[in-house]
Image (cartoon, rainbow, N blue to C red; front, side):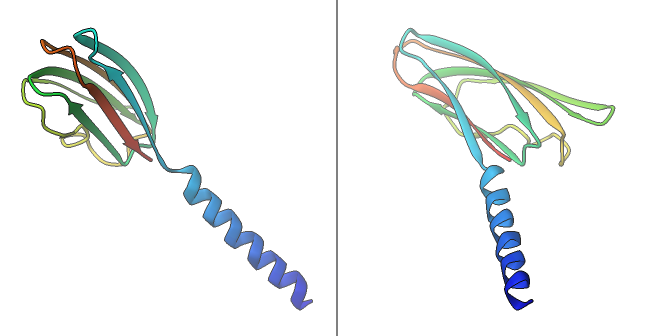
Length: 119
């Protein structure tokens, strides 16, 4: 009987660890090699969405639309500084799904734009 309970405890521990591994981090990037890039991504149950413009003298704009039940939250911004942005800054917490569209351009034809999502 002890072996059955110890096997069950081991299986529960393994499922817990694998559950944490499934809810991880992914990123999408676009190269500025041709001077500009644009892309869209979908994030289910995001906890954090961060935009990294990895280029100097970059013009970046983004639009984010998040849905939680019947409530829709959205935000659009543009900026010319290459600083990291938290895209969920003015969006209420615990969203079901978010759609992010990013566009960027530079005159130096170098660098990339990265969006990192943590679930």
